[in-house]
Length: 221
Length: 229
Image (cartoon, rainbow over the protein chains, first blue to last red):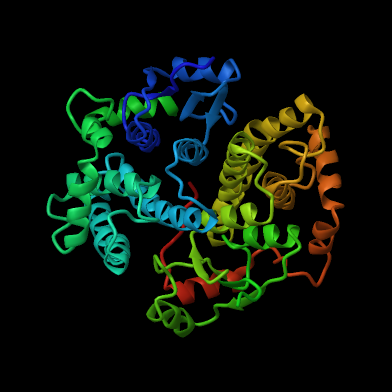
C-alpha cells in the first residue's frame, strides 16, 4: 500500500519543520525529497503534484497533500494528537494558531533586510514574552497538568516546544520569567520520540543561516 | 445556557467575514458587538476575553474563541460542514487553505495607498486566474459533482463562493475562463441559507471603505503604513 510519508521541500525548516516535528513526535518514519534549484520546483509544478503550485507537499496515504495546516491537521488526527472531542480540538487549534503566529515571526527573521533586523528581533522578543508565552504559562498554571490540553500529548504541546526552542535560539534566556514553560520544555523534550528527534542525526533541521537565504530565495522567486 | 454565538469585531469584513458566511450557511443565527472605540477594545483586553489580545473573538458554547481558523474549524465540525472522515477533512482543509491565501491578498486592500491598490488589484487577479481558480475548476471538472468534497455541501464550498465574489468585486469578469466555477457560483448562491445571506439586510458586510479603515486604526492604534505583500 502506501509506504512512508514523503516530504517535498528545501533542506531547511521553513513551513515544513512543524510537520517534521509532528511526524517525529508520533513516531512515524518519513522520507524527504529536497528541492535544491528552481528547476526542482518547476518540475513538481509541471507534473501536477502541487495543487496551488507551492510546497510544502507531503505524499501520504495516497494523497499529495499541500497547505501546511491541512497536512498538520491530518497527521494530528491520524495519530491521536488532536484531542478527544470537538472542544479539545478547539483549544488545540487556538493554541496552535497562536504559536504559529510567533513561529512565523521567527521564521522570517533571517530574511529581513539589514536595516530592519534589529527592530524585527525586538518585535520577536516583545511578542514572545508579552503576548504568547504568558498565555501558555497561564494555561499550565490554571490546570496544573503536564500537557496543554486534555491531560495528554497533542499537536499543541509539540508545536509549543518547537517554538520555545526557536525562540531560545534568538535569545537563550527568553524563558527566564516562565517557570512552568521551563518545566514544560524539560518534560516534553524527554518524551522518547521527541528526545530522539532532538538528538544529532535526526531529520530536524538547523536554523537558516543568513548566508543561505539567497539560495533559498532563488528556488522560490 | 448557550445562546446565540456572539461575534466581537469591527463593523466590517476583515477576518470575521468568513465566520459570518459559515454561520449563515449553517443557518445559525448570531449576534454581533461592533468595536467602535479604543475603550471598548481595552475593556475586552482587561476582562481577559482575548487570549492573544486580538480579535476576531466569538463567544460560542461557553468558550471565548479566538484565532479565525480555530473558530471556523469548530463551526464547520459542529454543523456537519467538515466532511464525513479524515480524508474528506484533509481535502476541505487543503481547499480552504487555498481560498484563505487568495482572500489574504484582498484583506489589506482598504489600507493601501491608491497607487498600491492598483498594483495589488493586478496581483489578486493574476493569482486568482493563474493559481487558485484553475485548481478548483479542475477539481469540479474531474469529479463532475455539485460540491467540492464528498458530494456534500461543506465549508470548502462556502469559502470558495466567498472568495469568488470578493475577487469579482475587483474584476467583474474574472470568471470568464472558468465555466465550472460559474456554474458552481450560481448553484451555491441558490442554497436557501446562502441566498438569504446574499440578500440586502443580512449580516453580510459591504466592501470595506475609509470609515472602516479609520475605525480599525483608531481602535487598534495601528497607524503604520500597510504595504502590499
